[in-house]
Every structure is written in C-alpha cells, then in structure tokens.
Amino acid sequence: MNRLLLIAILALSAFAGRAHAQTEQQTLVDRSTLVVQEMLGDQNATEARNLMKRAKGAMVCPRIFKAGFFIGGQGGGCLLVGRNASNGAWSGPAFYSMGSASLGLQIGVQDAEMIFIVLTDKGLQALLDSQFKFGADASVAVASIGAGVSGSTTAALRADIVSFAQARGAFAGISLEGSLISNKSDWNAAYYGKPIGAQQIVIGMEGQNPGAAPLQEILARYAQ
Image (tube, rainbow, N blue to C red; front, top):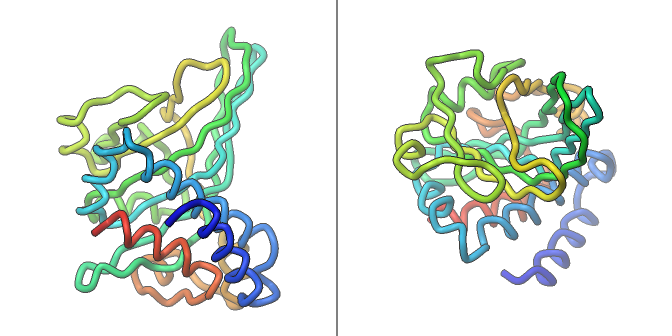
C-alpha cells in the first residue's frame, strides 16, 4: 500500500466515521497509521517486521516531542492496540499519553516517532495499566531496536516490549527511563461514543469505530 493510497483511504474512513471522532482522537489514529506504514515499510525495519509476526499488541506514538534547556521533558499522544490470538485480528485503539521530566545540562529539540511491539501477555498487561512507568517494574523487560535508540536482536527476543524509533534533532537518542504512560479514558469515551475501558477495547475487542479500520489493516499486513 503506497502512501498516496493510504492517505486516500484515511480520508474516506474519516468521512465515514462518527462525527464525534473527527477530532483529536481521529487525527492521532490517522497519524499513527501513517507512522506504522512508514516505519515498518522501511527497508531497514526487517527486525521490527519479524517481531510483529509474534506480537500480542502494539503501542504507536506518532510524535514524541522532547525539548531541553537545563530542564528537559518529553511527551506526546499514543495509542494501544491488541491482537486476537485466535484469528490475528487487531483491536480498536485505546488512547494514552506519554510524559516525563528530567534535569540536567541539555539543550536541543527532538521529534520522534515510536512503535512499541508487545511480545508477551505480561508486557501487554503492563501497558494496559492506568499508569505504567518505564524502568519502574523490573519484571517487565523492555528492549530497543532501530535508529535513535540502542539495542540488540538478542535482547529484543527476550523482551516483553520492544521499542522501535525514528528520531530527528539535537539529542543523540531517546531515553525511555522514567517515562510514564497514562490512560486517557475521556478520549476512549469520545472516540467510541460511550464510557469504555482500555481492557475492554484492547483485550475484549469491544471498541468499534470505522475510522480505525486502516490502522487495523496495516497492522495486520505487517503481522502476517
């Protein structure tokens, strides 16, 4: 699926979706769909594509913005999707935010796109938590591959969650340590038109919105 065709599908999907979804939530879903296509479709993303074949779920963060001038921080919107073990179908997205803060002599700006490939049920349950902090739970192994972050294939194969990133800007890499993932229940309710929990969406497959179809289709393509 080329970029122009994907953009056309996204436009038609947005037109067909519910009126309440034509807002920030749908914009995040559309951006996430493009990020999955661009990052997993890259010729250098062989490791990530191989890991997707055994993924239990995925978290996509289409723009993590990090800026620093003595006091630094990073943040952005993300979405989490789960994969049905029996038929390989992907769930609708549950919405999250990522944020962190740090102190130090750092000057620069960085804009990154990230995909977290979830390889175990334990990793998926950790992200489903209302507030999961990277590095705080020693029982959840997180590894990194790809440009902008360091890691190894061996470490990735043993991990519960593998991060895959593309980064631009003054910082050499992305540090996930201390980053907090928080559930956005109000966004879930707005996107699906009713109060619905992340567990119901990602595990129960109960969230239905036609605007998420292109995202589900592109994930299915790379998880084959």
